[in-house]
View 1 (spheres, rainbow, N blue to C red):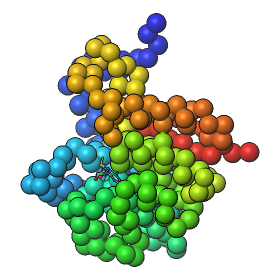
View 2: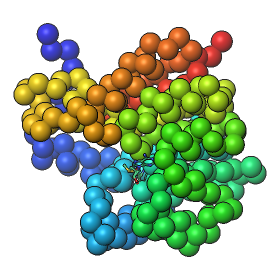
View 3: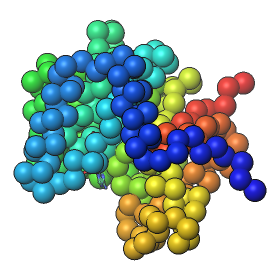
Length: 244
Ligand SMILES: C[S@@+](CC[C@H](N)C(=O)[O-])C[C@H]1O[C@@H](n2cnc3c(N)ncnc32)[C@H](O)[C@@H]1O
């Protein structure tokens, strides 16, 4: 049975709709736009994949969402060149007690992200970096309550991350966890040859869809959590603590 709606007839219309959405959403500040261009140049120069960044529309969405939930404290796991971090910083800046903590492994991309946030006047004031493995960093992070926790690093870290978020009480009562790539190009739902993305199927690496699927199932089955899985971007699993 086919119960989903295939909204757009082809890739051309899908792309046109995407551009329309960008043009009809509140634009990102110019500095964030410019940073995207600089990040693409930088990533290409150092041989990293610029497509690791969230896209423009996702940045517009996350900035809006952060404002919608009145976020003051954000924890980002996986910052790359600092593009999504800039969007979070823009959303929370100017509030007393606002802070953004970014976790990523050390490297030229993290140096680039720190320089960017420094140029924007955020580094070490609004934004701090924890340089290390995602799970180890979540284990040792000083306890605080975050209104948004964005998971966007190694996929084998998602499940240990949500367990640590719960056991260490890192999420504020009305806070949300946003797990990016929650659908992994559709592979979590369909990993046979009916999905062209199943060619060279990766079931073992740290980025495998298998880890994301285990995370999604853990979240779905956890009695203290409620969540919505959205087929937007590469899939967003938006999670919160059940409210009494
Ligand atoms: C998809 S990118 C993040 C993109 C960023 N959120 C953005 O939209 O601009 C994933 C990041 O996870 C980081 N990463 C990979 N393995 C990691 C690990 N074990 N611990 C911490 N970060 C890791 C990579 O260095 C990379 O910068």
